[in-house]
Image (cartoon, rainbow, N blue to C red; front, side, top):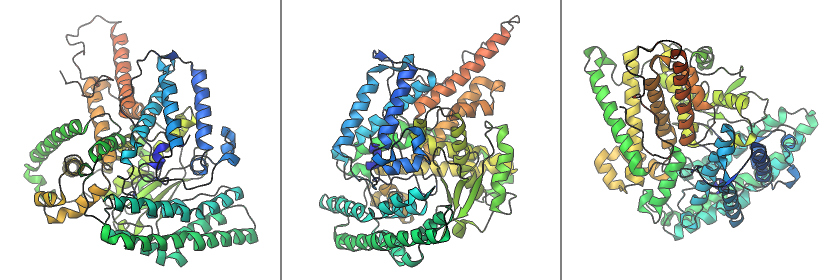
Length: 623
């Protein structure tokens, strides 16, 4: 069964926010009810189901296999059955029917009989597949902007092929087949865009898109795609003549199929220029508000409604402003307001070793990681994108890889923002989490879960935990942090105003100034995207605050972060359950210790804060 979301958010080539993880975007659904009266299922039966599910899903698309496995045969996957294609932009009925069948099968079981790990896999699957199905409704088909900054199919193809890994000679022919599939996929992109124009849904930043296409077209004789694929060939254990033969075949495919497709995209878009409409928020479109609520679930990883999220953000913003005002009232901090604190780093290469040395005091220890930091070419570099982590296959033995925009962000290694970026992409962010997952996951299907709220929220949260390690003055750091936090919350509130409440471009610019128009354009084109980073991080920070309040001096950073990490990138219902289990385990240990001594405590701790109930969307009040 194909993952439906690969044909929903931005077509078959779905990537996370540029500047961060390149893992395929996955999906989440409304809250899963596990207290059902279904048939009890054993761990053995459920594991057998997962094995079959994994093989069936992978054997329908070569790209899925290649992105996740170096040696798929070891997992029972028959490569000869895999269709070698870039996929489709819209879900196919066969995929919808298969997803419905999986949901019905899962709902027919009572997961309470499973081990905790398998039960949470069950819940994550049901969550993802149900949202995938909800988003596949035909009334939402042409609401996705496939030319947006984070969803551009043209940019995604460049990323896909420039990051394409070759593990052996047998991988080369499928690669060439995929390159030669670009014209077919381009026709799908053009047909989708023409249909949007017919429905008055064609809304793009036309000049920016055309500039991007032209950059790729004019670089065809010196393309980063060509250079990257040649490097992959050079790394294979082949003789010189064989390498040159394969390079020539790849070059022919690129020149005959890849680059001409960009010329065609450019020509077809020019024909549609007169039909390009001013950008609008999602709620201004037919069925747009309903679709935006599903996007919020996808990006936030929660079951909260737009109203609940807005209320939560309003409260957080008030607290942030209050604390900021309290700090800046100190005259000694006045001169530091608006200035980014400096770190002691002289070179980018110093940052991750520094982080590796210090993380074990706060996060569970993992094996030593081999990694490479590779600068991006000028064609791949985008202003606003400092770096990203390339998510490796499950069984890869290659070094991890972080791609870095040296052109735009390499001049000041002392920048706290740059340090934060490498903590986000490296340790204890994406790279560290990838290693933790490799050492702790019990079934390959767990690598396919990629709740964006947890995936990007965790990396944002984890990087923030490392800021005090730099030795920056505590008050200066808090002032900077509060300013960043406030800016992030404002962006999310703006996203809601545009895409949930229907604020027009003119109303937005009247409210925030004419200089805010680029931000309106970005949020209108990529609705909900930033919730993965900023709201996901907020959810995890809130859980940390609750755990600290609940446990006092018994709170432990390593144990708390283990609770966050142990289920992988799953929705927050599951993460919250694991944090609550951590709190309960510490309390039980305390009670066991105290039961051996005469009790002298007046307060038994029952009035300490709790996590929300599994079926309640609100956090319980502190007593």
